[in-house]
Length: 306
Ligand SMILES: Nc1ncnc2c1ncn2[C@@H]1O[C@H](COP(=O)(O)OP(=O)(O)OP(=O)(O)O)[C@@H](O)[C@H]1O
Image (tube, rainbow, N blue to C red; front, side):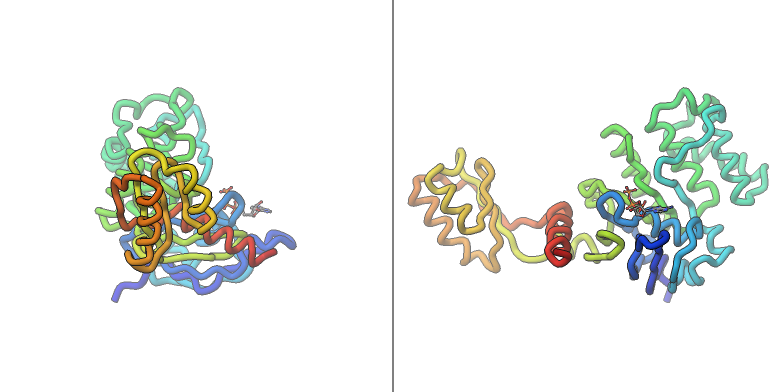
């Protein structure tokens, strides 16, 4: 059986008296896209930097690619795009990748050989010999992705890879991430963009104030609990709106949403809509979005802390 890409049994990091990671456990299967979600300051970057030995954890037990976290040779099998990555403006895209290849200990000839394919992969073939100073933010991120892959890593850490990238660029980055998974790599994605993560990740963990408060396959998390959506022809009648809201039923325009264990439980709502003269257009079983799961988890955490 192959070992997981990352298995954190216990990770704690203090910056002085501030506890940035308060005993985190995580399991990242090989060949998956794993999304680490959390609000600003939750500790996502600190966690990745701890795995990559960029920061020194206060306490750390676990493994990466079958070796203890921090194992030098294993670090050579990782790729990394830091958050707000800044490469020298006077270098060209090609030179940035060559520089990263050198840092990864790849012989210059081999580094040169790999560069054209990487530039093509990130759609920067035509810009290879232009200086970074002339690139847009999205182009810089693409070069950042290319340099993260130069050592053909088994696991790639991408810290907010779509930060500052326009919607079209985001879609392309998502496709690149999917491509990495198809090639068998594990992608560890840090992000606060929930919709984006939902589209690409197989598994997620939600980190809040240094603690993992939810984790699991996206499918499983978003399936949790049954939920129904009822759509009416035109907006829900006003006189019914207040009543529905008071029963914890969400009303937005022509759409009602409610948690219910089975279809039988929504019959009284259907009866009430009919009695109010509303025409029902659609009834469907719905999933929670990752955003809703996230908000529930964060709100739950807030109540516990209060
Ligand atoms: N070198 C440091 N010294 C002291 N505190 C730090 C240091 N680096 C991070 N922190 C603090 O640790 C906490 C976690 O920071 P971290 O950057 O890991 O969060 P994050 O989830 O990646 O946030 P963001 O989404 O904003 O990047 C924050 O409160 C931050 O201020």
